[in-house]
Image (cartoon, rainbow, N blue to C red; front, side, top):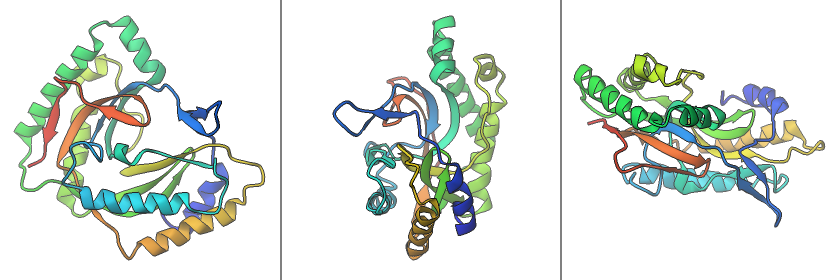
Length: 250
């Protein structure tokens, strides 16, 4: 996904993201997009473990934003919201419908994850937390991100087994939550805004590939030390509620 050939292929399919909308005063603002997700603690809140990783990632995001392209092509996400998504859960209309039809939805969701985390801890030997390494930039239809690869089999299996325990949980399935995406470990740097007809897509892909080549000299490592159930209202802030479950990899 980080190879130049993949970048050139994917750049032909870019689409404007609906997660950010034009603002009357210029620029774009985050659109309402509520839901729940399972993520690592966002940068800038409780994740001091990965401070070096995020410091490097923030400088890489700035290099991305400094590329000579239209100022509205890429909308950067706030660096303090950087995170690794471990499992997509529920969002937008599905989340709104779930809350409307089931007043206890959120309490039941938290209860499910209390059980899932307990079962996981009882079944897994924690010798060391999973470690993943940044591999480079990847293009998605509506976003640009850096992708990560596991440093060893143990780091991979711990995340895969956690996801399996989530998506195969009968109570969670009864709440309308099901797996919709395969796991591609990534941290989003920005979403696509206005894609002008005169965008030189091949040149844009070439610039991204050049960044990838430059960054290979310093590919930071990311430690997955916690998995947290987090709520979001849009794509710029992910917050924990007081009784929200968390899993510690130790």
